[in-house]
Picture 1: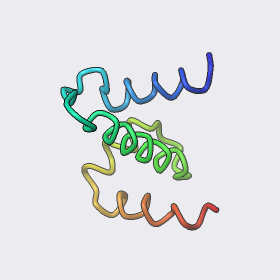
Picture 2: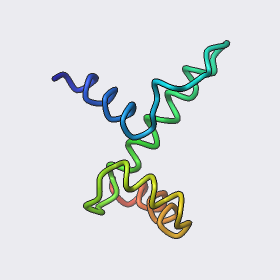
Picture 3: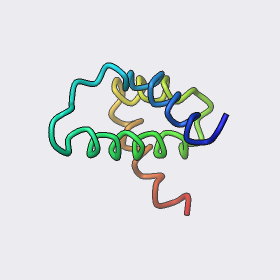
Length: 76
């Protein structure tokens, strides 16, 4: 499986990307960039949970979401 195929699969499974309804103008392209950014942020976090579980935990706990975002600069 190629890296782009793996990324597409993870986006579909973790964010249910195939059901997205945005198709007009640049909306789909802009949201694709945001989704890939969110995926990269979740992958950089050292927590051992799956990407899907990290997203769900970040939805429930604002502290975890802030921690994920803060770690962006530290992992350079």
